[in-house]
Image 1 (cartoon, rainbow, N blue to C red):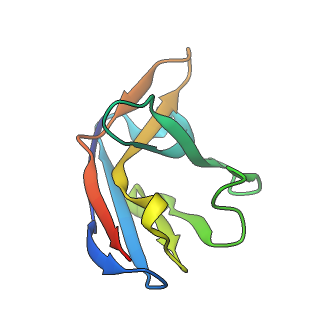
Image 2 (image 1 turned 180 degrees about the vertical axis):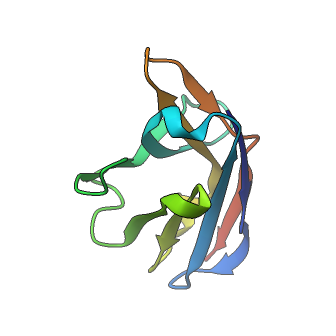
Length: 116
């Protein structure tokens, strides 16, 4: 499975961005789609999760109510709509896909910078 993120950039506090993750390869094995983020010197942090069924979504407390994860499985894509962005949301955002057997694949990351 190969993953490519897009949609990062620079935005002012209070603004919005929409990240996209495009999956290719053995995408029919994917059962969990996620977003993580990481700032220099810190561990990668969970942001949001979507199960393949689309029924279950999970969010970190820090983004609950501001971020929304959604999937377009026929297109092998999922998204992270980020609203009311804060400077502390600044990070490199990674999409991740977990397949049967438990292997997780990662994208290369996309930078999100929120200015105050």
